[in-house]
Image 1: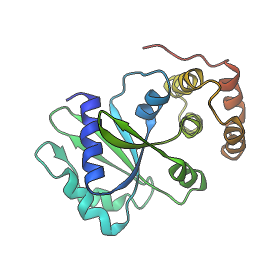
Image 2 (image 1 turned 120 degrees about the horizontal axis):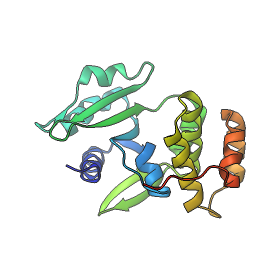
Image 3 (image 1 turned 45 degrees about the vertical axis):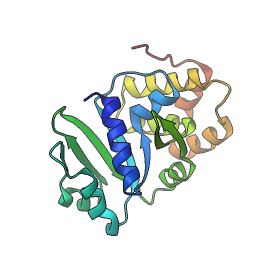
Image 4 (image 1 turned 135 degrees about the vertical axis):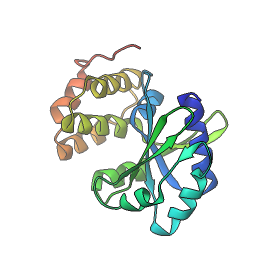
Length: 190
């Protein structure tokens, strides 16, 4: 199974259970920017405890490994659990929506699109840039910065820079955002 096929399968499973989610990470930056290979998928889910059983049921099959206890433990930091696609060994990271103000705003602003006939909720281009800059602050990576540069290059003239600058101050990534917006950060082509 390719990453794209895995993504579509995950979308079908999440949509079938009416799980509130948002695609983030590299797949989201690929959608808004310059695509690169990635080896996992990242979703933020708004998953009330009453919906855990339906989430687990959605991925209950011989092709997936999902541990209900790990899902339940994700209500504590680091607020994350994985679902493994066994045949391909590809991993899907799920992050439970936290009370963090930026993360809540990011989730509120998500946009719906359709990919190969399947509805998908995805973080906005602006929020992908900000989130990747924040992650780069926590764990520096050329990949994060390359993704940011790719989104800025492809979305040039379409980004809400006022929104981005306001949040960059809150997140402590103003210098990095200004580098990206000025074109000082260069996207990597893969």
